[in-house]
Image 1 (tube, helix red, strand yellow):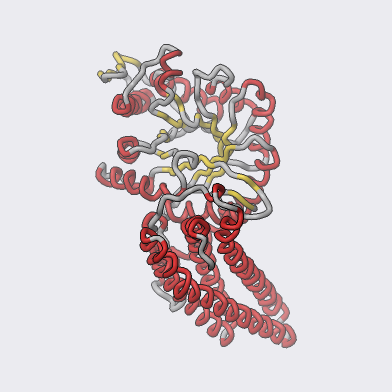
Image 2: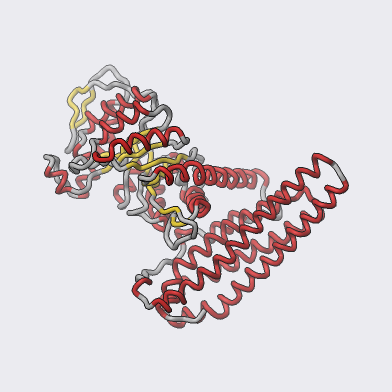
Length: 497
């Protein structure tokens, strides 16, 4: 679990379509009003259908009051860094310190060249970005003398620093490949990947490169902001992809990214007002609450040591996404419908487990509400009612533990050996899933112990809450991993599960 301690921000990635300029301004104002934290605007000056990013950001700064603004990310080959430094500082002054600066080394080189910009190799583009960072910071640093920098791509020959931004503008680098990730670790204030180019399962390996580079440079990796551009679909039923389902699923997946990889800024690509509101009013508060609760528990465990119930750190370490084996998969849609349905039976089984887990959480909250009433009224009747509620919750959890254990036993003894025999390359995945079953079994054992303690002492409800939270985190992560890796092979191999 990565606890980088940054405040969580949620934002909107708005497409600067010139034909939709009224919509963009309206949605930026809406984002400001409903409490989103940041607005990102992509920068592709060679696209004639797009508004100029800096002109648009300036307009949005004038129409909003509190939301932060940033180019997501600047096309550096067409934005000379000395001029960019003046522009960013000016907008930060005019907006009251609400500007951050996303930087990209360049892409779509044909378009850049068509606008008169340089055509750089990947290595040259990274070198130019590093020089640009030096230019930006030099011109934002007060000093009486003119700045002189002699770079291969950018030069300053006595330029005077200023104007100075009223807050330290973060330099957030769009990075995916090793050299860019290492540059971000050495010099960047933030990292900006996008889910379309860096899926959640790839963030761990990228983060490791960035963190190692930061440590080699004597920097604390936790000081680097992790900004994730995401896209998804709100629906009533959970789909198979990332951010495809109800708001609760979105909150679960984003919480996992915040805790596991330290992602602290989530910027949603959105063109629909309703989706913007759901993201701000349902997803963002749920993620903030879950992350805050988990980090508080982690701090408590660090201060107090093991309490007999808390096994969160080892469990989540075993379920680390970066260490899970992954295999290439084929398109399940190309298979006959009967085989597709066969593979998706696993999802239906898992959906029942998810539904039961939700019922446990509901029962737990009912107990918590009853406990509060009993403390206030100090009534024997309420004491008896509360005790009955505790016993009911205990029975429900015990039943669920048996159900889940039976499901895992069937998989371990029947489905997993059948899969490994049918496709040898699945063996590492099967082995990992079996290991995760053992971890989940341990969590269930601790939940049972917490329930026994709570029945003897109703004040131990928090111990049950901690274990239910832990079970939810590790089980939902495990089910999602299992589905991602096994639904397609089960369908393709036409196995009967």
